[in-house]
Picture 1: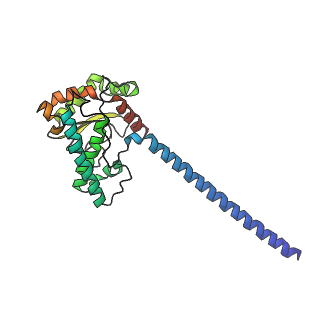
Picture 2: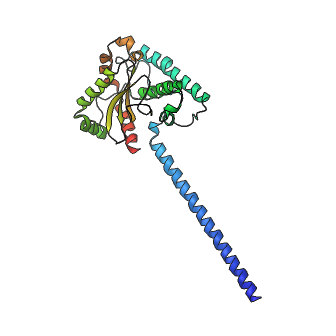
Picture 3: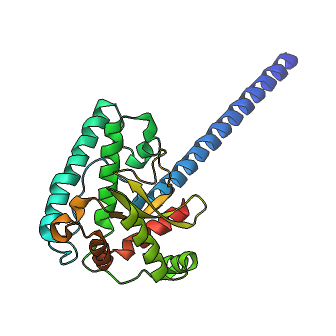
Length: 256
């Protein structure tokens, strides 16, 4: 009898020990998942400035607020016609291809070679313009400040040297396209350009990096005011650059 009780007690002990161990394992696993989720959420939240949706956001200023650098009619047509068209076409094609539009557009651009030409053109057009609007402000400062300015001066010798390099990229882009300042994979600043509505996030681009400043050099961005004088448009554009926003993108890109 005592032997039977002893065996029963032993079995109960082993059973309870196994359950406790399983509970501990599950608890640790759940805690680990929770911590990983919180960490991922924190990272995503910290880099929210680098996330772009599939819908057109509200222009952060009035159509006439960037005058005289950019005239009101150009801004209105550019935003309500060209950019709005890219946004709508992007959503239509994304829906046709069963793309999850709740996720950042950047995820799609990074593997754009797998998708249609329509998605490439309109996804790039939408992303580029959403960044472009934010890169401008009627309350511009003449230069950036802090670490961004230090990095620019380190990379290009001076802020003036950077402006010359950027302007050359914008002026020499044959036909339509964009000029960019990016943070590359080595966490260094780089200046370059892309054709049409391509951008440095795309896997098909020869020039790659995380864009922190972009300039539209399609003729529709300046022709009403500047006609064929792209250099004049570029020169006046510096007067409305939103360096505070560029700094935020720089900080986020460096944290990736």
